[in-house]
Image 1 (cartoon, rainbow, N blue to C red):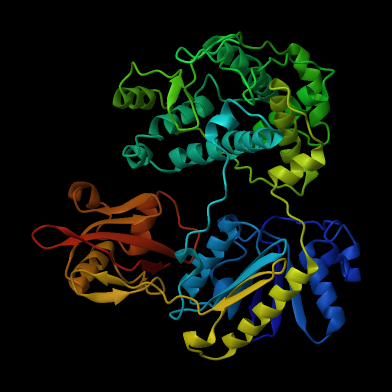
Image 2: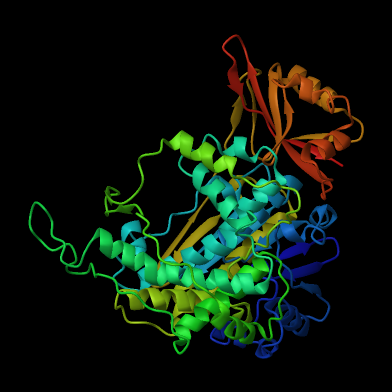
Length: 567
């Protein structure tokens, strides 16, 4: 939710999803009759309820994501017109995105969140408090990786594993491929990360090489069938070859498969098994959407059923997967014969050319839309995994609850948060010292109510000039009036340092060590130089540049505020 003071207008916006529909289980929303219509989005219902309470209050609802993909609507002009931002979000990424907008546009942001009887409120005021992203979010408790990946013993392990498979196959793979397609320096940018670089390159090869890239919906069905056998048949066969059912510890003589550690069984594909069919139907559909392959969502399941008998599944081949224990020690599998550097270079040599490839679609997990097959895939995947290990399966509703991390809302907690945010909202009308602001944590179940002053923004010292700046500071430059050369010279002179590199996101705009390459753009106006460096026309009213600089005989690093170039 964001507000515009000058027009007394309220924008109620669904940040987390395109069309977040009313969940009837949330009794807090059903108090107002406006929320009884399940065809309306939450934002529409909220505006309707507010308008009925006060017809003179000017409201407008929006039902689009707040994210980089919607900046054609929620653009620079939109954010610049606001007086402050109030967020009510259920994910960290959306909060961080709004936090970035608050920083760039110098806006107060009032954030809050609830978790059953617990809640917190955080006021963020420009140049007075630290921003939302200054403090790391608490890490959620995670199950040991070895249990999730190799030795699950309860349905939660299976659901976490299935959610991880969804993110890996339908989001992370697209993200890596798109990064490669849109950045010619991609390989160089990942070269230093030895732990993930080879996996990323192999993912790109597996996705868009001519032998593996799908060109039809039938190819997607074939992929889903092969994936089924890989996950629920072949993986178990390989694991039992590594650890036979009668395997014993060489030192103690104890059975390896004992207690909660259960030996897996294969689950042959069966068209009469709804879990088998659900997995392939959802997997094929999500794969087709990922590669922008045309298909009819209304008949997609029937199309999958028709194509399954025509598919020939790849035969089993043994693969020595690396297995770790709870301490992270490798106890079996893996291939240590090929040096890590050689493995990476071999993978890079297989990378396909970028020409002719379109960006892939990224699936953002959405638990509240049953028509998108997200929960259908996770439900089938988790229960098949459970069947592999003779774990009791669960209903689709339970799969949604665990995978979506759903915790029932409490109207008392929500009411408390609304009141606390309203108090801080009044403080946006005039300037207040930090001593007047309060961030709150409460737990109505105990009960606990803790209020404290928010922290001041951290100050960074520019080593070359001894000046200080915070996250709220930036250097604004007109992209039409300055050339790239003039900008570099200005920053070097102003901060008494040498500019070594200028980046925009993951793209390099300026590199002092490649003067020959820089000759093409160094004397162009910034707007033109950015087009050439980014190999695309920036679709924003401004771009943020990060400067890498050094000073002195020892080339000590100099940290500078970001440079905002208006276009």
